[in-house]
Amino acid sequence: AKAWVLKKHFEGPPKNSDFDLKKIELPNLKDGELLLESVFLSVDPYMRPYSRTRMKEGDIMIGTQVARIVESKNPAFTVGTFVVAGSGWRTHFISDGKDLQLLPSSWPESLPKSLALGTVGMPGLSAYFGLLEVCKMKPGETVLVNAAAGAVGSVVGQLAKIGGCKVVGCAGSDDKVAYLKKIGFDEVFNYKTVTSLDEALRKASPDGYDCFFDNVGGEFASIAINQMKQYGRIAVCGAISQYNDSLSQKGPYVQVPMIFKELQMEGFLVSRWDNRREEGLKALLKWVMEGKLKYHEQVTEGFENMPGAFIGMLRGENIGKAIVKV
Ligand code: NDP
Image (cartoon, rainbow, N blue to C red; front, side):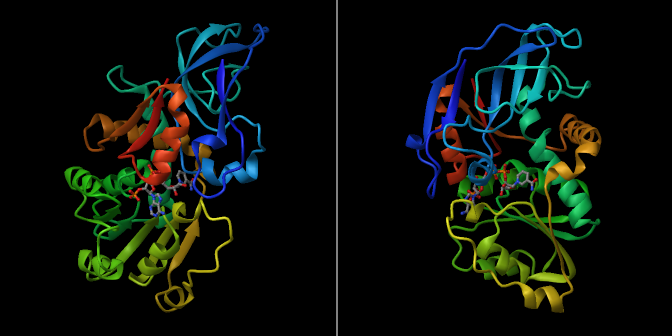
């Protein structure tokens, strides 16, 4: 088996030299165990902040994959079954089956299994529960989402459309803007090329925003919060603009609009709804099958290219979910 380890803690944006590719000898299977082979691996923003808090140098990079069972000494699992596992950046691994998640039973053959890491997986669920439970969006409202062309953001916008809302999205390239228009966002702009973010947000929705699904944090969030409507709701899903910072944040300062607009702002981790995972995946899969929820994947070929895929995703090179195909 091969595995990518964190050679050196990241300082600022991750670099290729921070990773090491290692060979690992796997022991023979014991009773109750399975041998799995990764087919698709996920590179996600959380790996950057978690590398500091949950990993030491020399540890295998954390992460999830869609894997195929290639050998089984566990009667509950048959060879050939695909599962979602959280076994880090490795080509092969052994499991006792306890932490493996089966793909929903209604998963159609025609659908790429990699979607279980994106639109019909953790990022899709973040969009689903963040909008329904944290933003509490209602038909007719206006929803703002940033990093809108990414794995979570692209689902947020489309679910808000399905829910009868107006959707404003921003992303960091003209190709992303074109993609978002194609999948039904009402107003879209490239936040990197507008002269004033404040003006661009105002122009996209002169009456302001009822819901703000924040994937970015920092300066973007502090500007957007000023344009919330009275009683607006802000779901703090991510703060990717700050994941590479080594010093803790001194701002932005959000108190004034929070008070006078009586806003609600709530951070969340998608794991809060682990007990409703099935419900969320079922709904997402249904919308995908009905063609109401479109998906795009940025697929990097080759396990050896995992660090590059991760670095590229953090730089914004992906449209939709960034995936590595072994
Ligand atoms: P994406 O697919 O959206 O990829 C990351 C995107 O972030 C890039 O494509 C880039 O798009 C944007 N980005 C990168 N750096 C910056 C920056 N400095 N300022 C603004 N945008 C930036 O990733 P995900 O959809 O997987 O994740 C989106 C967010 O959601 C992340 O913050 C992540 O941590 C969070 N998340 C939180 C979860 C939770 O449980 N709370 C679960 C899953 C994700 P662009 O070109 O538009 O800049």
